Image 1 (tube, rainbow, N blue to C red):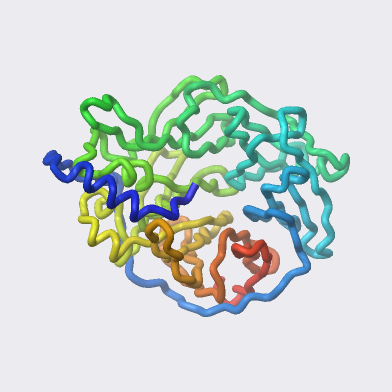
Image 2: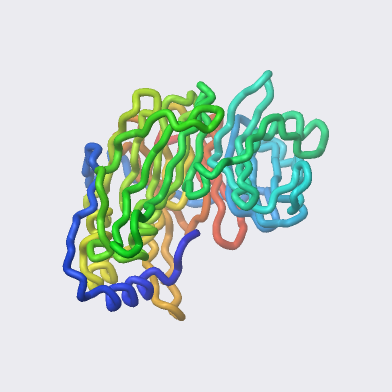
Length: 370
């Protein structure tokens, strides 16, 4: 969940722990590659669509269908034909029965199984992961689950889950504490699990060890490594796009290694852990809000919105889309004409479909960029 009272919390915690003297700098141990520009920079104007989804929270695209998930308790999942704009399915009630969810989230991980389009989804309230057969769900006009597993205690504190082609699960864990009396906290972890939930290995991405509240107050500790996971369609790589630090991590999940692309003018996790309150008030902005990936490109939705104190209203700011290839090269920066919440990419038409904060769905033509 995003925090609109970020700076107030920072102020309160800094006042509480200003007397603590222990300092430990938080550092990503993988290669951090700084960049300061993109090969192409363009401005784009939105075009309206005929697509409307009540309570829509996010968008994703597979081939010619758009999949939207929402907070509408009568239709958590909506599927739209992008060519005809016809709604193919509106299903998924809130509950604990078959095809029901208490909370519905997805990392936009599609796959083909028995020539059917399927999508992994998660119900974090019931700790269940399900594979939804999109093709059969459209045919039967009900949500069809073809595979599921009840997440064990190993996943309880997880911040993101992917299912690899091998059947292994790739899981990100946020920062956890060792001993609250000592105020020491461990860095997040990328961990591989077998299909029966046995831990196999860990990706050595973040620096080992721990850091203390004195270096990173509890609010920053919870936030500075938060992000979203997206897997490359061929299942070989993934990204972890940070919400609060200007890092886009590229993870080679088949070869167990990675690197981090950081915009030189953005706030790093080191900044979040060690800089003063006045610096953070001046420089902090929300970073990556969403991402869409193909086998060739990573399209990351950049916010740039400032954090505000309780009772204040953040100024309206237009979003942008940062486009990279899987080698991390910054290919294009696309400035758009409104503040966006979610994006999805149609490879056939080279259109970016986008959702704003008033639940409007638009598209942008980027055929001259990619």
